[in-house]
Amino acid sequence: MGSQLVKKKSETELKPSTIISSIVIFVLGLMMIVPFLFMISAALKPNALIFAEPLNFIPHEIYWENFKTIFHHEYFFKWYGNSIYIVVLTIIFRFVVVTMAAYAFARLNFPFKEAIFFLFISTMMIPADTTVIARYMLYKSLHIYNTEWALIIPATFDVFFIFLLRQFFAGLPKEISEAAVVDGCSQFKVYYRIILPLAVPALVTMLLFTFIWSWNDFVNPFIFISSIEKQVVTVGLEYFQEQAGTNYGLQMAGACIIVIIPIILFAFSQRYFVEGIASSGVKG
Image (cartoon, rainbow, N blue to C red; front, side, top):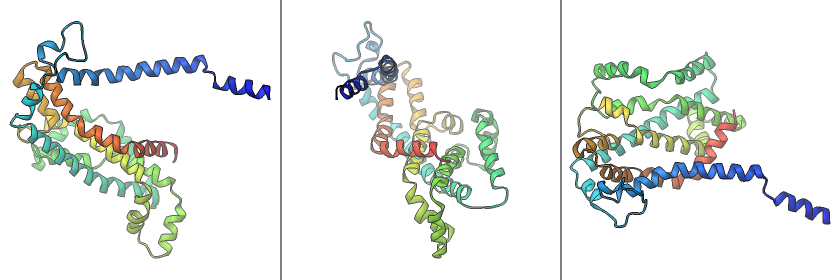
């Protein structure tokens, strides 16, 4: 009995390595959240007080003029609507294309399947920046430059998510789809009636990542959209800087409004997000 109590006591004691790792994780977490707190603090201060010393995260008086200026800007909500429109279409098209391609690679047999999949995976090694000029000339020839399709069409096909969903689909028991085929289901019915409902965590992960990457994209709309009316909200902050000089408070207020939707989405989909990442990364 006494030995068991000693054993339990030793198990509950914190090891030095655990304490050190906890401190390191806490410090790293603090370093990641400080810029976010600075953004909120700067948005609620006049520009002249943002870098005043000593630096104070909590303003003595809440300054709402930055948000009022944002809300009264003639293009801000236009940019916001453009971002939502582009992100929604990107999510819909990517969902259809990527899930079908992943299902084909995971559950169907066709000639040169592994070679084609290897070719797709190898394209992930090519930096996107090296194809900017080629894409610019291609969009010009297709007459989609300075349109929302210059952002939506290239984002429809994503090799990373094909790989992610292929791993998840391949981990599902083959007996399920084989039994459905014996009962008379076509491959398309197996895809959308059986496989997709079983892959909800992985699908939520893909949709959340697609939203975040499309929502936060700055380089592509900055290069391939030339009209200020057609711009998205991330590039719109750059126009704010050009008009207001170095008014960091104004930019921080715009950034606070931009991050609201991603934070809400992540809060409601966090469980599926973690589950999808864990299952897709371990299996396959």
